[in-house]
Picture 1: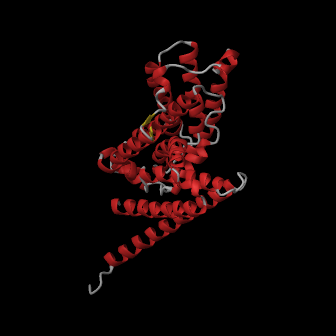
Picture 2 (picture 1 turned 45 degrees about the vertical axis):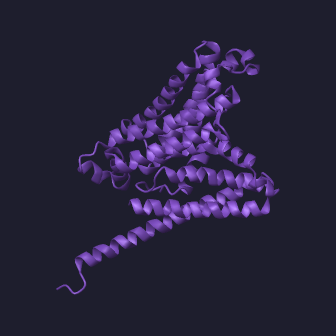
Picture 3 (picture 1 turned 30 degrees about the horizontal axis):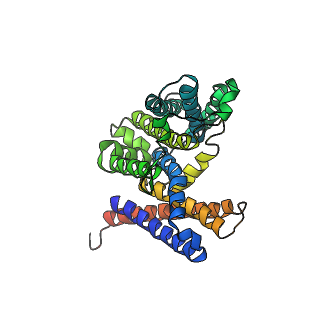
Length: 334
């Protein structure tokens, strides 16, 4: 499996390099350091969300609530810092906890109530967005609409190390740590086992419910990290923060090779997928393509990725059947 995952990521990387070369030839501004910094800064948070999204997808599930979780975490941050006067270094763990707890609620609806992941996270998407409007400090105290978060610790979250945005550093760390988690730990082995065949995983003694709980909490926590980056950058939060971001995260994960059927993929691919989407958007803008047409191109890439996923699934199934046939009737055997 490891070789297949690396091969899939390598293919995506080559495709990404081809896209970069094309836009570099079509638009000289695309080749500038400033444009690279804009790409790293502007799409790292999508990459982080896509890395978190990989965990529910690897289990054969989905998390439609991540955009609403972002809005909820952002509003909690605004309230605790601006209304309650909580220092930034205390607010950050609160935000991470809110994201993880939102993921936990998603998991409980799935493993305890028995809802399908699509239905459970669709319901919480609406609920979390409603809670965000309910607790909105901007609605309770209109003056907050024109005030900015000035806590030095919090505003430093979206800083830079030389020319490298910290958002990109966070993404690299999270992608590598989660890759190691999936590749080299028992938890990761169990994630692939549950995603590949949940019934067989249960028979093997794997605590499937616990795996799902941890996976959805990781998704929520990654979304919280992305929220901290964005709200630090904006020095505020809005009620619609994260609106439709779940679609970008899902698209990046799928383009990055995470199978919708579960059991196939890793967390490096989704990070690459996020930057591929970002590169296409920025490149199309620089070559003069209207913003109305850009989602069509990204949608076509997504359809191609899903089609390729189906092709690989069919090829894996065919290879499995051929291998079983050879085992049952070995060449030269009696």
